[in-house]
Image 1 (cartoon, rainbow, N blue to C red):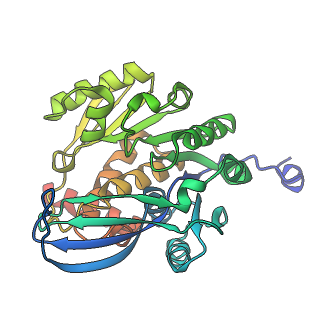
Image 2 (image 1 turned 180 degrees about the vertical axis):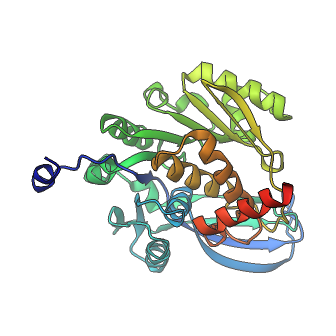
Length: 329
């Protein structure tokens, strides 16, 4: 029966891929001893171009962790677009559905980092904002081959909602990394929330969505439980920087402490966490099996400069965990 189905173009095996829909842009990273205050200029000591965009980074991380990964987005017909496509392909991302836009330039993001590793950025989406529902429908085969769809907030929210609806109709799970949160959180349609299986946010994003303080881990758990009730989402995962991460689902809440590591830049940590979480869930891991690996990926990412360039491989993540767990035993 398996061979007959295969000849008919059907696959009886469960999908294990990851589809990522969202923005891809070039980060222009300037580093100084500290971030400038409003109206202030500071002298920096390093500038670098680095592939960026949450969707691009998360797709690269999922691929580096061994998942068959499809990226659905747009870049411009320019040098940055060519460089981004090449960089993503080198990590193993399938860029078939990364459309080249003939009218708009590739997006860019000026990023400012300080000596403490913290950063601030401005996202200019460019071609990424011109992604259309037709682009998502054209990638139906990729979404059907994916167990998990990963979406964010850097493209028009209606497009993320369209992608989520498609993934759910094809039997996939949806992870919504609500980053950035719109200025008006009410702009996120109810139709999107109803299709989300996992909401992934950091502390700041959780505060904006819930209206509650996330001053410490107990407060974060309370806010996560409130978000779970408010939006009817089965699973909430919240990253808390140096305080680790928490998860809330039908089994209750748990806290994963952060790993002490030297911090170079925090730019790619959230994307590393998201990409590993998605890829581990896609290959059938339970949440409690996926979270330690995602937490380790985030820790490794802050030890290196850049976003895309800081992403660890699956082998590096597992070696890091093995070493740290051995040291604790």
